[in-house]
Image 1 (tube, rainbow, N blue to C red):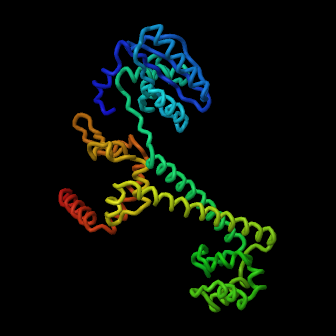
Image 2: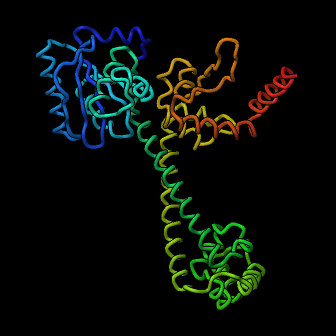
Image 3: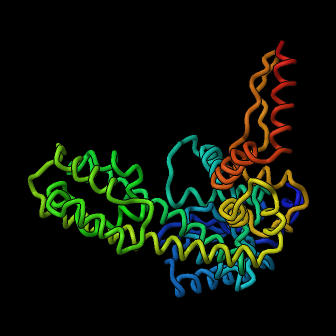
Length: 383
C-alpha cells in the first residue's frame, strides 16, 4: 500500500475492526476497537503457535459477527523477529497486517494516563489508536530470491563476526606464547604460516624442529614465497622469545582448536559468498549496479538484501527515506540549526550506503569529481 495519511485513515471505516497486538517471544496480547476507538471485548491472549494463531483468528471472527464488522486491520509494533510467523500466517489468511513506528508508540502511550509505564495491556490500545489515525505502513517482507539473499547476507555478517572473534583469540595466543611470531610473519593467516602452525607453534617446538625441517615443510607444499632465509629467521627469533613457557602442552592444543575453528568458519564463509554471488546473478538490476566502478558484490548484495525489489519504488527519495537519510531541519524562530539526517529508517541500509561511498570516491572518476567540486564550492561560500 502506498497511501497518503488521509487515504490511510479512509481505510478505517465504520465497518472495520481494528486490532492492536503487543508482540512477545511466546505470548501475544490483542485488543480490538471500532473506528472511533471504542473497545470491543476484552484483552485476548494467544500463544506463538499454530493453535494460538487459529484461536486468534476465531476470536476476531467472533467479534466481527457480534459487532457486524466486515473488514479487519491488524496493527503491530515490529519487535525483532517475533512477528515473522504471525505475519506470514495473517498474509496466508488474507488478513491485512500493518505496522506502526515503535517511536510513535513510545511518544503516544502517555496520552491516556500521563504515565511512562509499559505493559502488555496498554501497548495494544496505543497501536490500535495509531492505526485509526492512519499512522501506519504496510510491512514489506522479501519473497523469492530477495528473501534468500537477505538471509544469506545476514549469515555472512554473522560469520564475519565469528571470524573476528577467532582472530582475536589468535592475537591473544601469540601475545602470551610467542609475541615475536608476527614480526617474522606479518600476516599469520598466510598459507606458509598456517601450514607451519599445524606442525609446530610454540618457540621451543620451532627451535627443536630446526630451520631445515621447517623449510622442507614449505617445499613439500610447493610454496615459493618462503624459504631457508625465513626459516632461519624464525628459529633465531624463537630462541630469543619471551613467550610464556608454562602450559606449553595446553597451548599447543589450544592452537589446534583455533586452527580447526578458523578453517571451518573460513570454509563456511567461502560457501556463503558463493551462494550470494549466485543469488545476485538471478537479479537483473545487480548487473547494472556491478557495472559501476567501485561497486562490488558485497555492496550490491547488502543493498538488495535491505531494499528488496527496487521496482516497488517510484522515486529514489523513497529509498532515501527507507534508509533514514531524509534531511531534518533544526530551526526555531530566528535560530537556524544544523540540518542533519533523520536516521529514522534501516540502519543496516545506511551502513551499506556509507561503506559503498568510500570506494566510490576513491575509484570512481565521476564521484571523485563531484566530491571535489562540492567541497570546493562549499569552501568558496564559507569565505
